[in-house]
Length: 249
Image 1: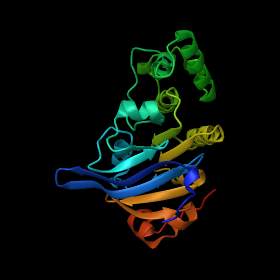
Image 2: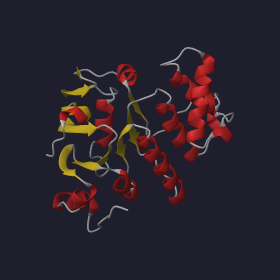
Image 3: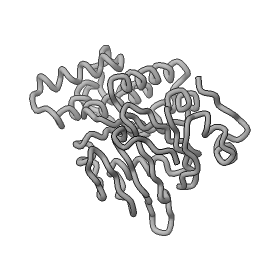
Image 4: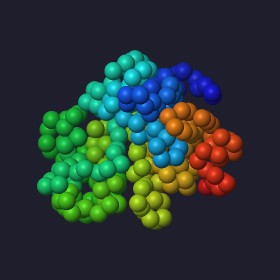
């Protein structure tokens, strides 16, 4: 497995295992993330990608393993503590506050770092501008479309001012043009200094955005490398890509 210079690693998950009774959903998986890197996490449905996200963000306590972030070893991550440390994430199923406006949904997360409502609203407004949602700021969460909800998921994660952003299928259900827009936003976030771990079944996005990719299958890590390396890996082709090959664009 490729190693990076230690001073460039912002986050690592070591020997993460998640068991549900007798089922091992994630089996002894280790990854690292470098500063300003976009890392892809790839694999077929049921491979363990979202479970791994849940483990490293504290939603599900890992049965084994630990996380290292900002010089701290975290053996029992919890969602609120990981968020406060600087790890933000999105969820596949969007669950906004239905009776709050879009900007109010975003403001909720901003109170993690700031108590002044005027400043919180200003921060939320800047996020709206970046995600091209300003014209929808007063729309209720219950009235948002799928693409708008997907962007709101990203906005709510950004409102907590994370150093690392975990994106879980933010392009699922979007058309080609909408995916291109989201890819541009992700690149903008990286250029702004953020490190990102991306789970996405849209292959053009995974291959086009990722600096490196880890591939899971049935809870096991089966490959790691550049997009070109993993798409040429025989085990990845057999378990996930089939006969199709995806070039990086």
